[in-house]
Amino acid sequence: MTTTYNCSSDDERAKGLEHAQRAISEKKCVVFPTDTVYGIAADAFSPQAVTMLLVSKGRSRTMPPPVLIPRINALDGLATEVSAEARKLAEAFWPGGLTLILHAQPSLDWDLGETKGTVALRMPDDEIALELLTLTGPLAVSSANRTGQAPGQTAAAAREQLADSVEVYLEGGPRPVEGDAGVPSTIVDATGPRLRVVRNGAVSLDQLREHVPGVLGLGEIPMAEEEPSEEEPAEAELVKEPAAEPGPVEAAPAAEGEPAGGTPAAKSPTGANPAHSGPAEPNPAESRAEGSGSTADEVQPSASGSSAVGPSASAAPARDTGS
Image 1 (spheres, rainbow, N blue to C red):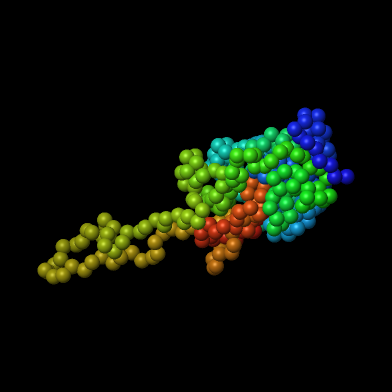
Image 2 (image 1 turned 60 degrees about the vertical axis):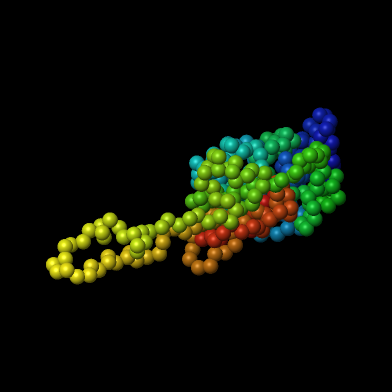
């Protein structure tokens, strides 16, 4: 039976969290507030529960939901090949408005959809959300709304759209909080050789670069390293043998080849994809950027359907960036 709990009351909040924990263990969905908008959540390790979440929203497996975690040390349990740079950003901005797309741990028994081996992780800065996550562990979360409609800013508004497809609604007041602009999380693809912003949001590029100077901005392409030009021959070429007879001296031949450089392979929102030659396919990380702001997957271009980040050498799945 669907129940709404008013979390402004300590007693009702405790009952609501207990019921929500039980619902998650029974592979049902719950709605709760985050630091951005309300989210609909399901057990990230239950394919049945994740399917129910997607069906409740009217969404397909091609836009897998991000995963919210209760603490930073959950990072290494869910992701692999986490770079020092990605770790710096997590330590600097979690809990908060930063989502990191990483290579998913291949040993985990989960099915979030067509992730191609990647997972989008975030630690929300919301007391109720963190209490629930501490009780349940990592949750697959998307914005609490039907696809194509505005995300619910209260549990009551979310219930008008999702109705009885959700077992528990935790009412925590308006989200975003009054006076807050409700900016979605910034999404950073950390699966390639360079960290790359695939959706702008709560954490600015300048803030990211204070911790990792080499982060690429949205749509930014790294400058290629230049080779010596014909007008600037290498030092060895400038040394010539004395001419036996006066006459014109031939210029040293210029080096052949294209300027070095290129762009790092873009990752897939849920899986690392090897670079390949030929036309680049849509970057999953970028797709995610469309699907969700904080938990709002339809608010702005998401990591799942999303904004372009420049040429990419690898394909990435579309993603729901709802966190």
